[in-house]
Amino acid sequence: MDFKEWFCLKERESFIIDPQINELDGKYYFGQANIKQKIERQLRHSFVSTVPKLQLFGQYGSGKTQMLYHIRHILLNNPPSTLKLKPHISMLTIEMKSKSNHQDLHLQLMEGLGKGAVSEWVGSIAKKGLNLEEELRKIFSDDNVVQALVKLIVGGIDFVAWRWLAGQDLSNKELEQLRVTRNLGQIGAAAMVDELVGIGRLAEMLGEKIIFLIDESERFLNVNTPDAQNSLEDYFRELSENKNNSIGFIVAGTARGVEEAARFLVSEAVLTRMGRQNIILIPPIPTLDDVKSFVTQMLSEIIDKNQAELAIKENSLAITLETYPFNTDSFDLLCEYASQEPTKALPRNIISAVNECAITAWDEKKRNIDSTIVTEIAPLVFE
Image (cartoon, rainbow, N blue to C red; front, top):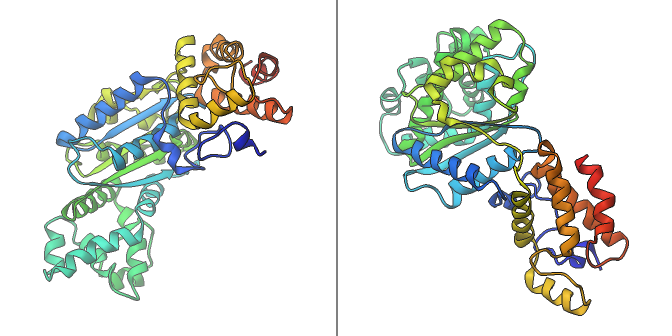
């Protein structure tokens, strides 16, 4: 009997919850109901007059990536009533080096959107039989952006146009081909953000709302060049302005508070525009009862209850369906280990401990997880 069958797992091969491996796991967010409710409220409120502009911080393993995927699941499957358009979600893990600047960020955001999506939006306007340049000028104040977008749907030059729109430097010959007067990032961050916001408006004309979900913002700490830091602050400041009501962004990063985040992400210039209520800290799971709630919710979702009930009867297991495959003592012991040190009561640690205990039980041919196994495994995870 394989591991999945041994423990009556439902649609998975282990107890690990990870939406980066299994996209369907994005529907889960166990425990910390107050954090979930706060984020859902901010999403609901943000779509009333603008778009989400949120930053999530927490220590490693606190569930930031899981929350990003959970937000994606909410927006796609149960969006707030205030979101009137179809969400176009772009998820990306940011990459930053010591000299990375606003151009590097813009390139990653544009690549996250993808040439195909932007080309499709431009092409949809052209297919309506309208004058494409005139329609684009109603959205974009910079004629260079208009020229590049028009060329984006012209074969033979479309990839050059995309490179310009993504902020890459072109040769003089390529600039002449596009009929543009300069490279996009030449002047500064504002022009790039204006282009991105304009693309958001273009998407809105076609019934879509662009939302970026950006993970691992702690990599912004790699940037140590003052000019690069300033240009990134300019980019986020412009993106956080009220005038941007078409490009939503939710940034998640490892930090125990704003004091550990990259300076330009939490500068006064950015926070006063974004709104301090949109900075959300995800703490460790606070109490023993909260840990128990986390584990029971997790087991409830991933265990096939019918199969588990049958396994309990057939094997005369002295355990309840609620805590299966733990008995009462081992369940309580695991939760006590998890909650002894508050900074260790993290979703990643708890899920890892449950999975490792189950693997040990399976390896020892035990149909349930007893206190002996928890005593062996839990200290390795939580101490």
